[in-house]
Amino acid sequence: MKVTIIGLGLIGGSAAIDLRKSGLATHLTGVDISEANGAEAVKLGLVDAYESDGDSLSKSDLVIMAIPVNTLSALLPQVLDVTPPQCVVIDMGSTKGAICRSVAGHPNRGQFVACHPLAGTENSGPDSAFSGLFRNKVNIICEQDKSSPSSMRLAEKVFEALGMKSIFMEPEEHDKHVAYVSHLSHVSSFLLGQTVLDIEKDEKNIFNLASSGFASTVRLAKSSPDMWAPIFEQNAEYLGQALAEYIMHLQRFQYLLMKKNTKELHKMLAEANKIRPVLEGITAQHASRSLAPSL
Amino acid sequence: MKVTIIGLGLIGGSAAIDLRKSGLATHLTGVDISEANGAEAVKLGLVDAYESDGDSLSKSDLVIMAIPVNTLSALLPQVLDVTPPQCVVIDMGSTKGAICRSVAGHPNRGQFVACHPLAGTENSGPDSAFSGLFRNKVNIICEQDKSSPSSMRLAEKVFEALGMKSIFMEPEEHDKHVAYVSHLSHVSSFLLGQTVLDIEKDEKNIFNLASSGFASTVRLAKSSPDMWAPIFEQNAEYLGQALAEYIMHLQRFQYLLMKKNTKELHKMLAEANKIRPVLEGITAQHASRSLAPSL
Image (tube, rainbow over all chains, first blue to last red; front, side):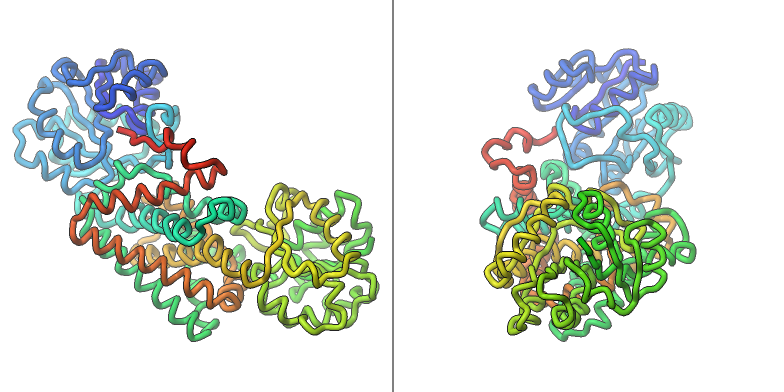
């Protein structure tokens, strides 16, 4: 199968590796606005050829779009214009409302499968791509009823080759949930990084003092602004709500701290502790033992 | 050397393991208000004996205090009252101002070494202890001039046995820096966990949607409230300042989001990106290549 990957970064590059490994992709062409990225992707063997103009689209069986969401929703209708009727186009953007709306009335809407693999790292660029990035990760498919049955069948083969488990949601539902569970994490991490950099003018000091706790909390602050600024913009409404609630909780904490109300502070922290069993995928009742105080 | 460990959790237990391994500790007694923790620590071989009352203190060469900071500053003067003159007392609390003040006029102040090892995980209790927790970590020593030279010599052997690199700070300086680099990370993580739990009533949903980014940002929200509520209380002034700045940055972000000012948002994210070279301990100039956008 002839595959074109638009966007040769962490996501596109990692998809390329595993699509080739699975045997699904027999020839891979990479499209990227950066010639340097294109040359590197060819050198790393992620794709067989690089092109800047997208000539290969008219000869592809599968197109994967892994570019920032603003460019993605602008480019997607044009991609559907030029791909042949049997070709399936899959996007991997972190927002779904704006992207689905961009092709809502498109005559070739059936060829498109809207998806969001919940996978990534804080690194970017072709050299950050690796095999297994998507393995056992959740993939959210939106508006599956607007994709043709044959497009869905091919897309499922792709997701299977990448090792993902698919779940289904409507675009608005998707955007609301990921605002809380993914986008807010990124904002809190970016701004934690900025707050510390603002205060600790002596970088050596941060490096010395930053214990592993800080490093993990602030890890996402290393993420690419070119990718994340458009995501935040496209999901501004739900992210704004999530941020308002987060700020409200922080302000309540600050008030309790000022009032030296340690009992209520303790209660807030114990409430937050309930995230442990949730993350471990077990019920809160079974996990109460591991929440016992350490002293 | 006879060693008494007060507090048989992650910190005290891990110190016990490596002090025994190094040969420095020949007999270890554990003190803990929880009998269950005491029994478990003996069973795990962290200590040779458990006692609830602290009888061993009068026969110890070294006492390590690894308990919540409120109990620590309350108990420390009493420990210095009963330990013999050659015994050295080391605390491992995450605040230093209140702890140092608690023994400021104590006749045995010279026997005490105030320290804060920047090491830990989100887990607590004797079964979370492990060898190597402190290896290559930074240890902050405060008011070293108030510890006697012989106390400092023994303490340095202890820190060497644990594999830590020591740096020196005054208590207020310590409390200010860790407010930003450690305590604020914990607050942001606890409250991120709470915000998501508040909204996502369906825990299955969080589990499905929480990609690895969320898990790392919210990891510290699993930390023990019994340990952290007293830390926040003792460091309320500096943590309050750090929180105020963090909230200010979040509100500015929210404003830019509302105004759809993607250019300024992008600038904020790019500023935060500067945390990457800092965390990697290299200068920003050398790292510019790895900050290149992914597309």
